[in-house]
Image 1: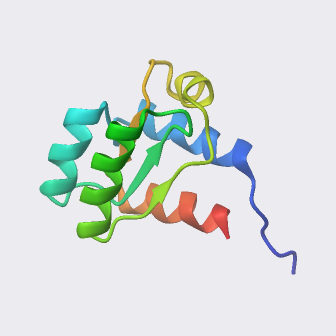
Image 2: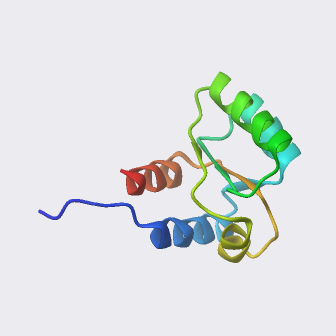
Length: 104
């Protein structure tokens, strides 16, 4: 049995698939609202996000026990979902579980 390793490309492909399936919340304010409403299962935060935005997203996510993944740049996230975004929340638990499992 082959052990899974980090595969960033597969995570980006899953993000694109989740976007087409309308299972993502994108943009800082919408993601913050979705986190508060317990509608997000994992958050992707661009590694080049500003300090204030990064702190707000991380604080809200940590308070609600939601993992935050910061391994992609804004350009990579934009290319994956087809929209310029720095913050992406995954609403679907199945997609979220698959993405987090690819991180291990």
